[in-house]
Image (cartoon, rainbow, N blue to C red; front, side):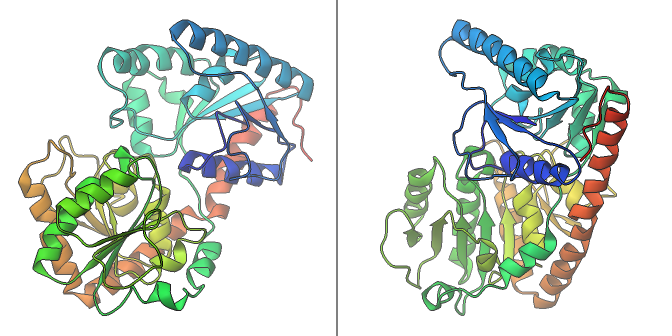
Length: 411
């Protein structure tokens, strides 16, 4: 199994879970481009690194790609690999260019159309030319969301090659972690005022700026608090924007002891975010694009009612599975079976999008029975994504591919 790195991230967590699950049935070797973050999501299987430098100009990148392909091909031969599963585009390139008779699977974790980092001529070349050509070399391309599968087919990847296998979750472990009590000082911030919660990297994709702006409008109307768990490059941007909006803000990387009475809590990364979610009243998910979002699903496992942007891809499939993707972004609140789907909060969104969010959050905060109903529905929905159920799909795919290769390497 191949991934660029094992640092903190959703794809890395999925990689770890898949490797551990497949390692119960096959001999699995994890391979990363480098050892960065290798301890964060260790699967328990052997780990090798390509140890080829990255970065530089276009020529450097091309030469590094060539070196990585050569090193991975040697690793495949030395290990007798009959199947290589890659996660994330850079790893897909190296996997599919280093084939030596083994079967190959590329796992696509994020929306290609929604990703704001894929734009202009470069984006067109990646989505319409390079990746379709490359994915033709794969035996299977696995999308973590049904809408990613549709995107890939729309970009020219042959439909028989593509299938959807959603991410899976250890719901029992998450619920057990959510039951761990907070320290008294931590619990004190969940006082008489209702609390909205969000978890995720402090990254433009997650659009915490848009969420904080909506929260500021809501806070002017009623007592309410917002707790954000996660860290990243936008630390100071979020603090600055919150304080510009007049929000009393506590930030883990800046302030001293945790204290009640603030409007916004930027708690940074916490080893057990679920014990914090357990005390919240609502989970608010503001991403501009996704794949199959782990944070949203984990909040649902904790029994939280969820309010989410209808971004590409994942939230609609999770919250309104019987509906199709609309041709245009929604402009108003869409009640769904397992939560609320909301307009995007991007700079291009009209002011009515933020108004819809404020109104919807206010109605839910005034409706304890409605929150309980949505929370129970959310927890029930997550039974469709348990480890046992989704692992069976992966084991079936791997068995089919290995059955046509020279050796199955079954333990």
